[in-house]
Length: 182
Image (cartoon, rainbow, N blue to C red; front, side, top):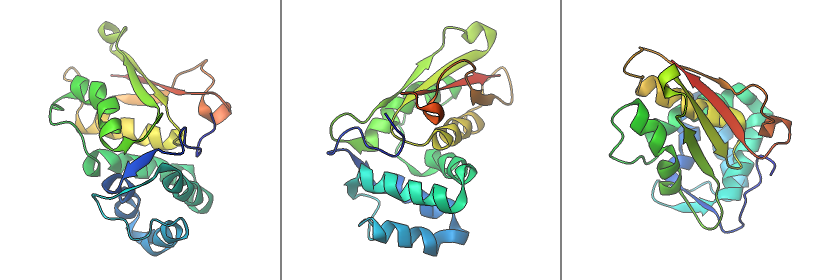
């Protein structure tokens, strides 16, 4: 499935998750709000639900105007503005709760998922699989921000990178897989 294409025509996104693009880009707020208005979601409030496709169209316009790394930056703001389960207290619970958080902020048919593989946790590695219509750099930003906000207890930092050998959505694949090391 291509990025920027909702899996379901009924998929919706909570307004507080959509508004993160405004919070993350104050210097470009006027332009971003223009994109949102063009897509029919200009007056969204934090508790409103909007069509996921409209939100994806806004992200596509942001990418075209400002580039992939801007999407990564927007993704890093998601953990501070979107709904997250109250059970998130540390690195492991944050990573394990990402899919639940995704479902708190999305609804309506197939919306995709986040799956954590901790098989190599003893080696201080984990894999996060992202099957969703969002741009990969957006996912990279979310996961990186969670690592920074909830660092592993055995290390002050962790690194998030593309899993080598996996065909990601950047290359037409169905998912993106990120290697998290600490």
